[in-house]
Image 1 (cartoon, rainbow, N blue to C red):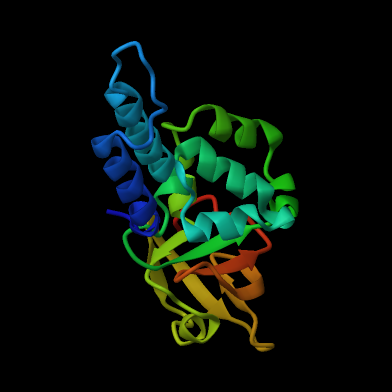
Image 2: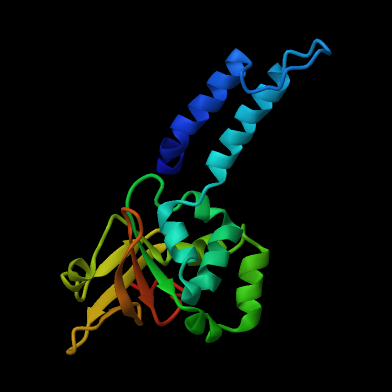
Length: 191
């Protein structure tokens, strides 16, 4: 199970225990033992646990510059799964970067989460936690994203670019994962 579930497990255990003992139901004299209400509480708690954002998705959502990418994560349902199975590196374009993409493409992505949205998001996710120094060490080499290979290049000033998108705010903590804010949207695998 994901780390979001593990952190919620103690609260869920209390709800389940209360339901089993009938302690969470208000007493009534209609003969209802409250077990349906108790079970509903456990079901609700489990559903809430499944709906929590992962730490990396929450970090992205908490940065006002990244609202378009955050909205796309939500549209695809990735806000509950991204980084749940282990650390990831997320290359997150700013809202300004998305403004360079034709608006109809962004609207299409958000309205059809089963279409090309997973591929686009996948181009921005690398399995494992790669800090800037790790990426610099990959200069000139392609890196595997969830949706294909993209090249890493370090220029003379030491700026790291992934498929032409330059990291403008590196190494943001994503709760065990890492976020690099980039200045362009990666639209296709090119390596």
